[in-house]
Length: 240
Image 1 (cartoon, rainbow, N blue to C red):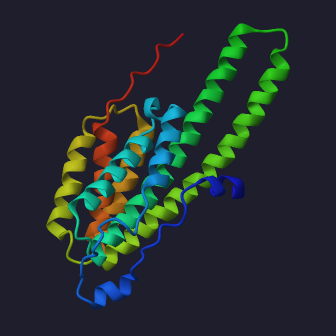
Image 2: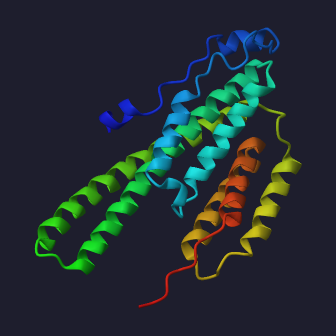
């Protein structure tokens, strides 16, 4: 994990302390976006794309792209207040974490597919090759577990920050987002228990955030459900 983190997203720092900006009433910077470098985020997304994450059934790569786009829109808008600068930093961190996770997941899928193909080919050195593939698959699974925790920690940081930025989203907006997500869940295949379970878990988290008056986090979870449901899904392969 130490080696991997060395290749990941450096800590994004603001050149103007956020506390000072807040005390100045949210003044804007002279050079919008100069404090946050999104180049490492774009590099992480490109690496994930080369790994095949864009074709993966998992939704994380698309979410990373959306969060990077949101960050770029904030920079293009100019006049970064302290609040917008903090949003920009968090969007960069979240997009990078999602890109790293998506890249590793795509690599795991490739290894699994290669192992399956090796089994079908039944080469003379099948046993040794399968053993190597299995060892690599286990290493990737361990890496995915670490990246999943990294992503969860980043999401937690986003949620906590939204709790401090009161007034951005309202309770009505959060309730509406949850209601829309529940309606969209009706489109899911009843047999797709994994996706249904994940969506229900996210909606429960959204409702808990409403009870804690963290409406921004509630909207965050509800929109993740909407993204999962509305993304085109590949049909299940026919039974052999």
